[in-house]
Image 1 (tube, one colour):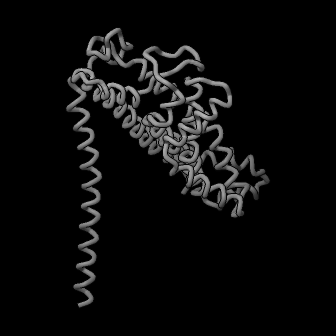
Image 2 (cartoon, helix red, strand yellow):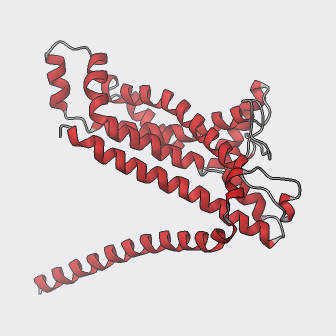
Image 3 (cartoon, rainbow, N blue to C red):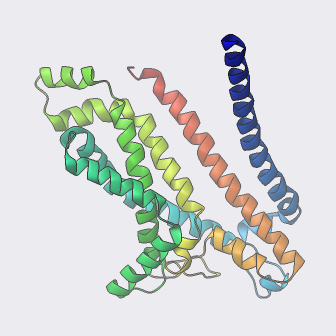
Length: 284
């Protein structure tokens, strides 16, 4: 009786796991299929190489080069700023902080910040901009995205550094190396692929977010030539084009979503490829 009950429980759990896997893959293919089906007919060279012309939002010629370049500017800038701050925090938590109350509090704060809605980051970034006397601009968007990516990147780096075998660090200390020398010569070399994954994960979140840059980056049909000028982004390009009551423009919105999806998927594939190649020489 017990054996039959155990077999039924195991079969039930396998069924649930299979259903979850199918649901995840099905959702992915459904989203990709919808975006490709609706956006591919509107995809052309002009979409990728031109900025919006006069009457673009009425269905006339032009493209979304401004949004593509703007999204890359915002995401790359925000990721670089977040990385400059995140790496020292992660190193402190794992190498210097130990298991103190402060490190536990910092991790708790990061977990809470990870769950904060992006629109809240947008409102906070807007207040920071007002305090600094800035208008909606590329700089404001970069600062806001840096705040958004900071908890994601820091916690990812924190977990990556925690996977370094304690024996490696102890061997480095035994040879007379300082903590900082151990960090640069042992820890960072061992965790390079995982740190890269954390950076690209945060980049993917930043380039696809709309709410956080809605008030801080603004929107423009031009490619920004200064950090203090407004900048377009692909998520907002999708939003604004879907709001136009012209089918041709709405179809371009799906084409914009397809471009954004391709960028995010490419980032994920590159992350996996680099990680698999760089982990060959990692000591487990």
